[in-house]
Length: 491
Figure 1 (cartoon, rainbow, N blue to C red):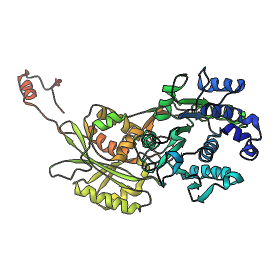
Figure 2: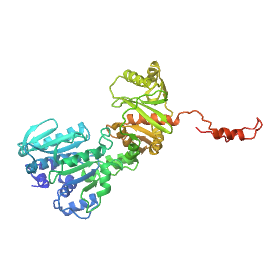
Figure 3: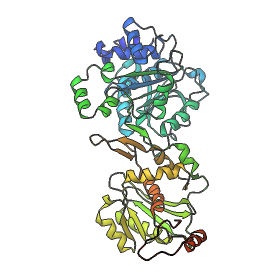
């Protein structure tokens, strides 16, 4: 039995698909994914959503589903997970005691619970499938055919150590960025070896689009519209996949914010958002064997602080110094959200004094309270003349010319690479910030960039070279009323 037949079987999944008209595009997608014959109508949908002319004759082992919000992606992932777990036999590919895993990866715990509830209903509400369930846990089902369906969150560390029969990735364009510099690539790199020993193992990545970067965009660039491509890329607007979504909702969203709505509902990659810093630029400036440089006497240090504004924001202190023409990052101190603000200031001041620093620069959003607390500890707090966007803009050429040295902290690398330049709605101005996705932060990146940019803008003593002095002495004397210009000072 194939999946399309199971969707029509009243003893299996038919109760969830009574309104066939609203599921027509999904049937076309599932037919193409599993290499099933397509009707003329389904073939037309296939061509429209893939920009391909030839319908597939065999199932795909890799597929990328780019759809708008409310299209039904999460439910379809749950449906595919249950079908692959219950209707395929992997036992001949398993070692004694080994289980095959159907792994569903969600953006966060909340979305994972939603998908898990879909899976639970598809299993337990069908008596034939409910009898296969041996054990139910908080995030997984063990079936009596040595298959486990597991729902987890996006961490490349948590996906290792399994034999995967399928990996179904939900909203990977919005996976949090603190766990790795490029979380989508890191997780996919961990998934593929785990699928290598199961013939016919499937990788399916489904997401609404975001910026023109990352694994989703790269798959679209490489495979969309190419009949001979090994991976299927399916791109469709919300109402193509789910006609029950009211057009008026989409029209109102397009009127409010066309760039956002085009991505959210029309499944178009955003052109107003672009990557700001490349991984190559960061790694070229990173000292891989140094996580922190100790304080040294005779060195003038500069400090920048990014104080958490509440919620999940960390407070981070960055300290740097100058070596010839190179700005050198020495230390980053991060205090996670939830730590008492008074304790944060106290700890930061201890670090500042260890480096002989008695003044620190930070943004104006923290208000007067931290300035008073720092002052009580003998440290002056100055408000930065530059906004965060201006700091990052000044930091980029320093990074690209390799006139700074960074320390090896994975979170620093991840946050710098995740920075985006985007155009604000209404004003049309560019801002540089962390991605507008849940769990994204740039506290560590801001503190590091702020400390380095401080050095580049700090006043330095005038150095009169012997050549400049000789040139000045060789000039003819002028009357006191005549000012002199052009003395070659070097700063």
